Picture 1 (cartoon, rainbow, N blue to C red):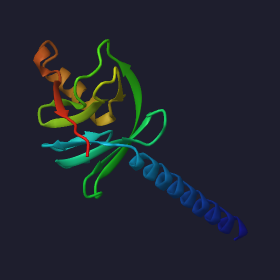
Picture 2: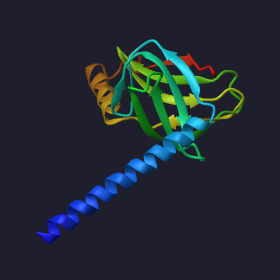
Picture 3: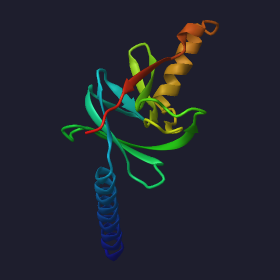
Picture 4: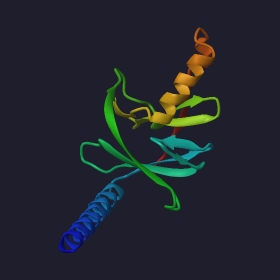
Length: 156
């Protein structure tokens, strides 16, 4: 009985700690100037599908390794790890880059205007499965690859 109570208390403390850290990170990310974009299609961030609408994208960490994508009304959000990608020339406009496979869109890159460094998201299991399926349908057809779709960001 004591073991069950200890285990339950430990799980509760862990949950409270994770909630607190997430709230602090979220508040910290909001204090920066997040990029906003009107995204006219449903899209996935990792394995989570978000509906079309206005979203803000902000970093949750100083190193920008973790990004938060949240709807304007705050009802829909996703957090994802990213890695750095560099360009030889700074981005002219802030953009969110999506990979589109038929009617499936996946957030792939985040670029800030005036910067040569962007953030890239790893492909999710769902995206890799779609890629594999499309390759099996027509392995020699390069047109079955993804289409790059860019959405310009703005700041408020």
